Image (cartoon, rainbow, N blue to C red; front, side):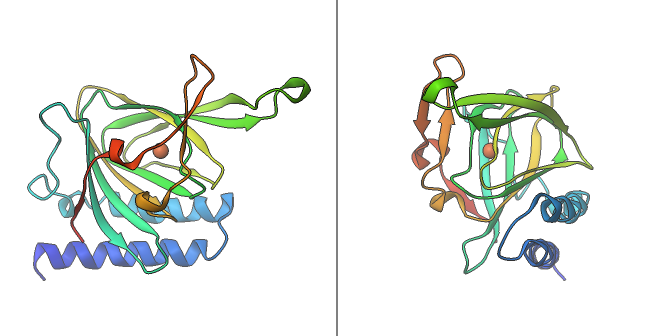
Length: 197
Ligand SMILES: [Fe+2]
């Protein structure tokens, strides 16, 4: 097999395993089991060489490469990021998500949205922080909200699996912790997605 064939084979295998674990309805327990499959794919660093997946340069913080998708709209991305990468709290527009690290370390803040007192606007409550590094993954249920901050001084290489591809995460919402405002995510802010299937 050529390196490309080898990557396609390994990615398709892992993606199909994950989708068969999750089935039609995600649960915390299924996402936990599926994480192990994505972590094992991340351990095969030789499949994700910098020649094919370059680190961003020139002021952009991330490059996003589509490596698998299916007819139902699930998608797996390889993402490379500069060391300063950080995102404020956001959901994924009703999609479940699994993120696993190939290289680098990220802190994920996990949030829930809870009703305000006396019918006031819902509040974002910070529940916990999870450190994600090689050998580890984080997952979000469809109503999950997280923020991310890169730790350390090296670039990040990570895999992101979503039940719903980025383009269809239409109602994705971001939360400004300083002002309490919510902002609808616009795809153009995410930049161009490069096809590496
Ligand atoms: Fe996210």
